[in-house]
Image (cartoon, rainbow, N blue to C red; front, side, top):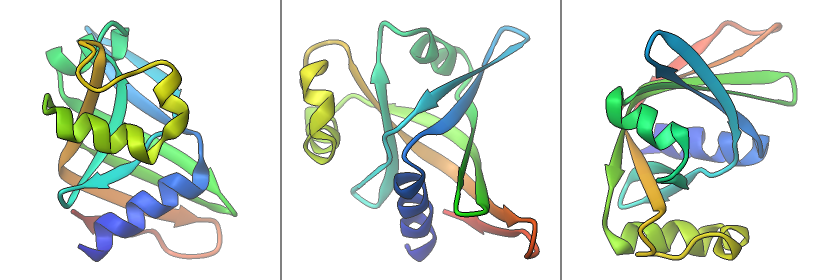
Length: 133
């Protein structure tokens, strides 16, 4: 459980990280800012109407990259949607700013948890370190 907490805390420290998905044969990258642990899984959030949700439905593989204080993280695995209201509400409670745009059970709020997650922490001054969660 320590690895998942370390990854989540780093993403929260970064604030804005970049999520990459695949759209057909074209990579797509966009800024994200949610990272939350619910029931021992690392979650992110988006809207179901956004292209990223459709891309993840077609291909759940992803990669995240973020940078803070001379260290960057790369996270990869698969993102699985959790349709439960409890998971959506937990994300919204942890990120009150989202509540202006999303409501649990609104038909648009989508929360995803990472399966088979791996993360590599890198910097110019230390050897890369990879953790699995």
